[in-house]
Image (cartoon, rainbow, N blue to C red; front, side, top):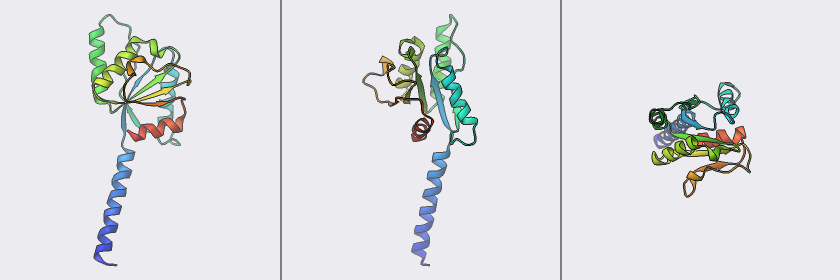
Amino acid sequence: MSSKLKYFLSIIGISLTSYYLYRKRKRKIFVSYHSKKEAKYKNMLKAWQKNSNFDLDFHDKSVGISINTNNESRIKAGITKKLNESNLVLCIVGKETHKRPMVNWELQKAKELQKKILIVKTNSKYKTPTCLLNSKFTILNSFKKEEIIKEIYKS
């Protein structure tokens, strides 16, 4: 085998290895959702992650608690920190999500921070939050594992 061919094959091997490692890296995802109505969908994401039969692995950068406090600025500072730590914001959109002030604020902040936004509707008829009008984002019109995982790995 010639030295040029060996060099070429080594470059291809390095490129394929790099791509594989890039694809397999753990994503840092902030999940935005209406906590009372869409919690089951967030729990489904976590279950998919724990299931070794599914190709999904991520760091959950969400706050993970219901926002019931008078100190809104402190809450928003905590959320901003979590958004800064993420590389993808996944918003689970249910029937009333577009009306939720905190979800809209999280998405607006994600836009300001130039985060990639993935909208996943639990029903295609549900409204996208209005704060995303004239914005760049990806939308899935159903909560399907294969489509969600594919979009997560594009980030």
